[in-house]
Amino acid sequence: MGTQNKVIDQIFPETLKILSDLIKFQTVSGAPNFKLIEYCEKKLSKLGAISSKTINESTQQANLFSTINGKKKLNGGGIILSGHTDVVPASPKEWSSDPYVAREKDNKIYGRGSCDMKGFIACTLAVAPLFASENLKKPIHFSYTFDEETACLGAPLMLADLKKRKIDYSACIIGEPTSMKAITAHKGYNEYVTYFTGLSGHASNPERGVSAVEYAIRYSNKLMELRNELKKRKPKRTLFSPPYSTLQIGKITGGIGTNVIADRCILDWEVRPVAREDGEFINKNIDSYTEKTLLPEMKKIYPEATINKVTVGEVVGFDEKEGSEAVNLICNLTGDNSKDVVSFGTEAGLFQEFGISTVVCGPGSIEQAHTVDEYVTFDQLKLCLKMLIDLRDKLI
Image 1 (cartoon, rainbow, N blue to C red):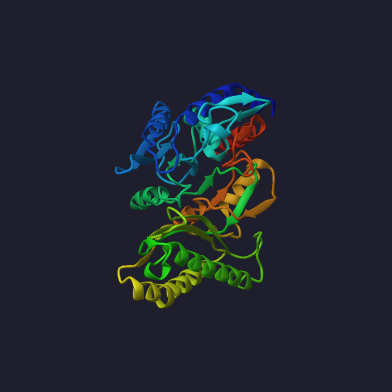
Image 2 (cartoon, rainbow, N blue to C red):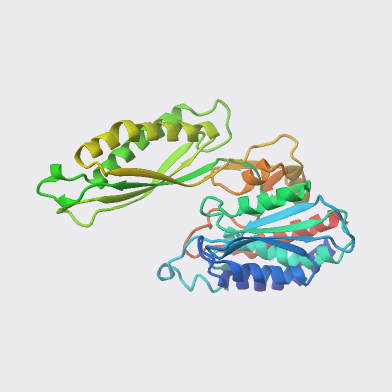
């Protein structure tokens, strides 16, 4: 234990430096992340890592998948350490300091993405030299993806590329903030945007127009009815809280003034299904209501009226698997056999669907994720470093 603590103390300053560097990259979902990926790739390449990238040229975003074999030439298998590079937006006016400049105070490091989840990426990069200097029994893989925060748009590109290699990976650790506890399941995440197009006109004669806002409200009311139905569909046995699938309307945008009939409205909404069938239930019913009720009424006045539902993304849930190799590995590494499930989404379901035993475990608390003055504690980062060093020891 003394030797391990010494190693942690030696690499911790480098961990903080890497995290500070990562925070500087303003990789908000949808924004380019090439510079951050180049930064990570350069660090890993110096250690002899073999890297590949999957790229979305139109958005200037990339996933990075790098493999360290240590001193041996290894074929296949190994453990994947995975984290997403994107962050949610930050409003500088609301923060105590610049959200993209790391600030250390009271044994915490503040900055957008410090907790979710550049802290984990920093830990993996700081420990990478320790893997590279050993005779590993299995390879260690570093997976850094883009746009996880917006319906996990990046990971599927990378996984499709990995599928072509026909390699069996032993386990995947997704380093989302879980306070270093093993998370064994989470709900799915479906995100939609519905666009309403009506007919503008003077508000003094509303019957001559088609208010996109009013039809969006009726659409919203139907979603609320369906939300109540989801509660009745809750499974008999579930560890989730709440125990049923949820539906939430996050944003409504439309209209230009009280005296003008709104010809445009946009509705952003989401479903977090316990079971895939719940997502299908919502879509089937809201689509039927749209086609049979709302659109005919709109087109009766204005034939060119439209309601267009766009799927931003549908992320599969993460299912608990008995005897999971990844879960057993984390419990062994952390010395904590407690397990939990969460309602927030991650890329874990995608890796699991790919056929890789997966667990979610990383530094920081979800309570700090996406918040103003987001931070991760030094203690959490050190616990993550300890876990990764123990993983190194297990692979030699």
